[in-house]
Image: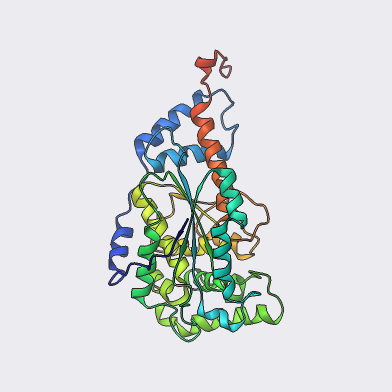
Length: 345
């Protein structure tokens, strides 16, 4: 369930840029087959709402009709942030490794959600004893370190997986996510900062100051999303970028968890507005800026349950919505099969 392999180094980010410049699109034949079947099913048109859209989306991006959700994977990437030393979280950085152990022994919320969903849970540790640098003093990662974390994230997409749910664990990663969003999407830094693990008062002010300091210290990176990721992101967030890209290349639909996971994926959207077409945001986080971020990348979250746990919990929950959508589309009888009269006129 856990993978502690060291990130595989890439010499630079050029290979990633090349992949993003040549992304495969949806499978037209599978999409057409889904479009043709939907009106024949025993229900009024549109009666299943977003479940219908999800069934079409899954077919188009898996490249087969009907789609299936038989081998879903939930991947949680864990990394530590140097900026945590600035008191931006309600918990110490040591909690990252402690929670990873909790995942391994089956004691976290995501373990229960994966058990209920019959999903394969994998935990990917990224140098937990070697936090990124404090981004208020310069880049959090070198380009080589960032590229290595991206490459490591790509290993989560193995043959046979038909749906990938992505999440993260890392104390201070909502600070990093806020800095990424402010750098990529502009606006006041404070508007992208929320309570995260539950900070308020002086701790929240320190979090805002850290984001502002990070933007100032790394202004040379602004304008290049991949350089922004290296400067202000974390290894676990870079790994999510890699997993999203590898899933696109392998025709695996993706569910993104909350604020931090969406912020990481938005790096790709900032490079190409088509880059997240194979993704859906699983739920609207209670982290205040998540709504604005979803609007920036043109996504409407599938669930809104007031959750803000991270660890792919919302994505693991939404996995079952996709499975339900797929099973309705493939299993329902047609009007002809059921000998049910269609719409009059």
